[in-house]
Length: 287
Ligand SMILES: Nc1ncnc2c1ncn2[C@@H]1O[C@H](COP(=O)(O)OP(=O)(O)OP(=O)(O)O)[C@@H](O)[C@H]1O
Image (cartoon, rainbow, N blue to C red; front, top):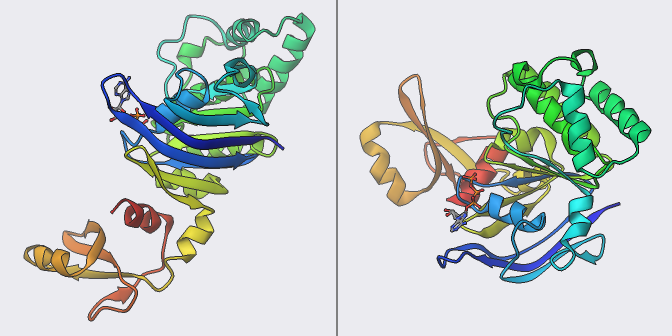
């Protein structure tokens, strides 16, 4: 079992912006969802975990090793799947993996070949090993990204906005692959999509403005909202009046009619009960 322990972490950028404000978290093997809107501080937190920048204060331990002062330990055990690799060179999948493996320090040729073959098979790209990666579809590129992230058998894998730009089928395939690898390693999934967290993560945290607002198992967080979510269709010009009276957590146009969803511990007059979803947890937490 791997454990990542973050204690009282703070990060203030040179311009004075406090991107991380006193974060504490414990993450173990499995898929951990880091959910928050753009600018919440997710990337700042990831970059600090992987040692690309030092925190202003606080500690980060990985398997009981202080990785703020020993960033090499996390770097050796890390797989990173960025949102976008940018431009791929005109190199086929096999050779590109081989190149990355060498950069990652996999010196033994036989060991490299065994790992590359097994990873390409795992991500269903073995038959495409001689194709240049830049010709791959979005889903194939993401699966290639998983293969490169897993080279060197990392103990922690960080994935940034992984399903952006994938069609639903590719997205399912990719999600199953992530779920499969998370049995043995920590996978941190950074995203602003509630959907990905709902489908994949056994633990999650909601972050905004550099702070952790809520942490727990998605199911448990949803059940906290049982019998507290209500909806009603209203006229557009009634919105202000409802806004002043209720805690509105979302507004939606359905067939041009405005529906509001609110949080209330008791049933408000004229509202219908709604089965709570992770979306409600997210919007209630951010509200
Ligand atoms: N190098 C930097 N110097 C100053 N401010 C920064 C720097 N990097 C990020 N920020 C600011 O810190 C805040 C958090 O940014 P961060 O990129 O961590 O958010 P995020 O949750 O990853 O968002 P996104 O999903 O858009 O990447 C933002 O307000 C951003 O403008």
